[in-house]
Length: 286
Image 1 (cartoon, helix red, strand yellow):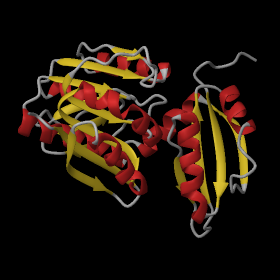
Image 2 (cartoon, helix red, strand yellow; image 1 turned 180 degrees about the vertical axis):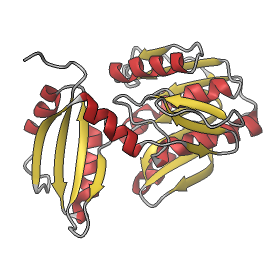
Image 3 (spheres, rainbow, N blue to C red; image 1 turned 180 degrees about the horizontal axis):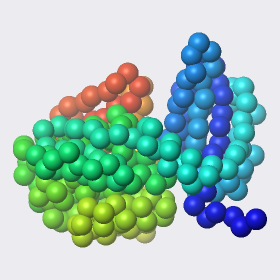
């Protein structure tokens, strides 16, 4: 039987509610992918699904799960292409963000042009606006445009490309975007084409010593706390005006803020939803 190259791999893990954060954090730190949380009342058990490019990737992920993780069950399965599409159609819907933006799944028709429509096919990238961290970045992008009038953006950890696409539609034409995951950059490039705009997304490792970031008025880094802590000097050096950081657990926010403040920025605002957090910092201009 011929294998469908569009099929995905899924690692399904069940946990008790009190262990969600521990397992969720390990999955993100290890695979740089946010698992999707599903609850089935009245059972208190929670399922965390992490999606991979292939079944083999999911199986490898299952094999390296440490015995110390408080798991009830873990299973790697293949997800047919049609089930992947159904999954996104259930979890990803039209959503308005801020004053000007509207996120539209590529299978939906934009209701009107009163807002800037960001047409997104998520692929394997979880930058859809439904997660607090992505929403925070989009909202802060609008605020930065009002307060700072930036002419350039550096999008570190671009994911589905949604922030760069939004920035372009809001008037920022000088955009440099990259992500560690080549699958994400490929999908981001496709999303730019769907929106009929010209953007280039690169695959790069922020922690690579040979990677030199261009300076930009506005820098957004939506990525894991561990990376933000290590990349603090590089991120602040590349920032001319404002730095937007997200992808941070609220309990880790002070550590992230402290790590970047020492390099010449000051915290302007912070917001969270009880689990995730975003921080805005401005460059200390002499």
